[in-house]
Length: 468
Image (cartoon, rainbow, N blue to C red; front, side):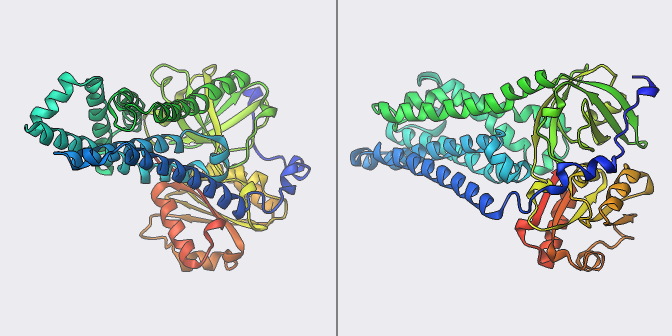
């Protein structure tokens, strides 16, 4: 792309004044709607859990329960069904199911995924332990001898054992102390093996599970649950992103260095006027370049789309983000999304407070474009140095047009106090504002705790965190 054709994303105030963004209704996503969607999701999940527990109960006879090893076999069967069901829920939570993600937001869903993840792993481990103990008691043999018999003599047990080992390995690697030492790309690749682990365990459950042997209806419903989960993942994680990527046909046209660590990548595509994007959202990006084509990473747009152009602004925080500063023009790009509820459409009140930690300003800069004119936003930027104030002129112009205030807190945490009293001094009317927060996981968690202590209602707090 020649310098004469360089695209600028400096906000055009006249076009913003006449855009539909200034007429965003308040509220758009009401707390009642969020509560209804959450209640529906919980109801469906509990209904499935009840059916799962019911399967284990109706498949157990009194004579089987009181027989040698019967109690342990029953516990093994129950933990297998509940653990596997929770594993399916865990997968569905991050499957990008649109009606759930649009209302609850991917960040909250990822947190739910992390909260759920220890339970299915633990229950499946208990299943292996109690089932082996139960069969060993019945056969009057030892634990390890029975375990070897399972692998050598029972159908589909070898593949199930491989699946179990994979699950345990993934669980170990997901421990924070270990995960923090791995590159994001390594952790992400290993994490994908959970799909394989679940697939390997499927056959032995159907073939050997007491709830399914001789129960064709139960077997059919369980198979339908697995196929439904696989279908959702296939459609929302793979097919839809491919279709959208073909529709928009994105390619890199320019890379601009914002500072020594931050680059803006401008892409050109087709049909971008049909892109259903709201300021503050993000995509998962797959740059089809050597060495990184197999990785998809989440980055926010740092400006509203300007068809036929898009812009994302990325800080060098790892191998993938670091490589984007030297990405070649002409590189094809696949996208998945948009995702996130850090948008003007989530507002509950007329006014907003935006708090950005470091590169978190990218999402909030795009969000600013969709806030109404004269909406008087307050923006707080927390950075380590002047150099980190990327997109400074654009942010200032957007705030000025909306008659808002900007606070820039520059320096180390030791020298710059950023707590509840400091925020209340800058924003005395914080209880009458929506609070938008974007930055690192630790930054977001800390600010959420501070504003909640001040008294801000949870429904008025909207956030996205940059993390694995």
